[in-house]
Image (tube, rainbow, N blue to C red; front, top):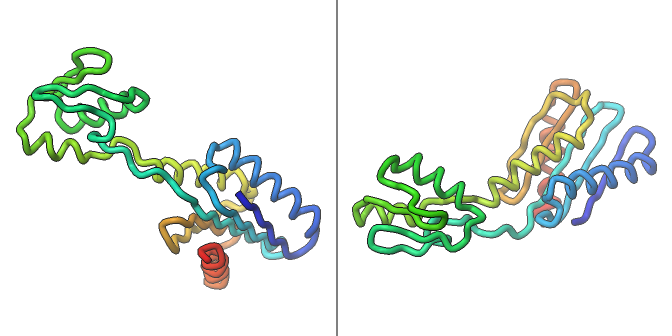
Length: 186
């Protein structure tokens, strides 16, 4: 992942190096760095405005029920038990007592064929949703504590951009954030 920091208003060289390391370390610690292509942080120290835009790289497709179980007539067998707790929670929330656990990897069900077909397509785990939540948590840790006014900007599915300041965020900063985000999209 490439980290680029742009600073206006003093301390450019020291601040740039410090924020590059901070961004890299925090995103690594959050476990998202390998899923990101590029991060751009803009800091305007005179106006106390910070903009961070992150471009998400390739992410695995969501895991559906059919991707992790083998179906029988009235039961299914879990092939990969990493997501078994999520699967069971999802199925119990959706179908209640029509779903029961027979053994560690076997799940019984009393559903119509139509219900089974719809159940196969349910999403058990979406990597992108989890990744976006962890990215936002990481960005929250990177941004200065005093910059409590936050504005998320969504320009595409693969970009997460946040504007932060201790003052109300005006239209000029929203436009600057969109400009930074559009540079990352290229």
